[in-house]
Length: 101
Image (cartoon, rainbow, N blue to C red; front, side, top):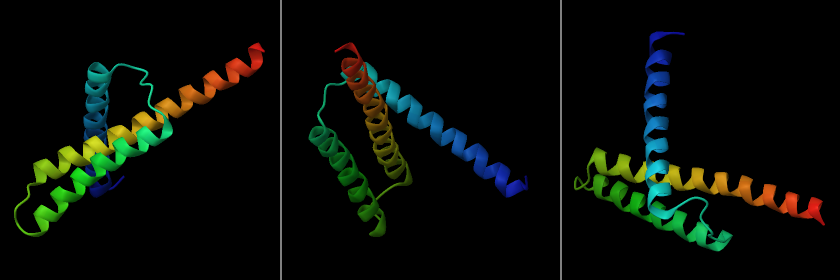
C-alpha cells in the first residue's frame, strides 16, 4: 500500500473508533435495544443530520469549526449504525416469532 493509502486507512480506523465510542455513549444513555419505530429512527437521524448541516453552513460563512462538524458527523454515523443494528435485531426477532408459531 502506498503512503497515502496507509494514511487514509489509519484515519479511517480512528473515525470508526470515534463512531464506536459514540455508539457506546448512546447505549449507556438510552439503553439497548431501543424501542424506536421506523418513523422515530428517521426523525432521530434527520435531527442529527440537521445539526450537521447547520455546522457545515456555519463553516461556509467562517463561523464553524472542524471539531463541531466532526462531532455532528460522528453523531449522524452513530445513529445510522444504530439503525442498522436495530434492523438486524428486529428482523431476527420477527423470524424467531414466525418459527415459534
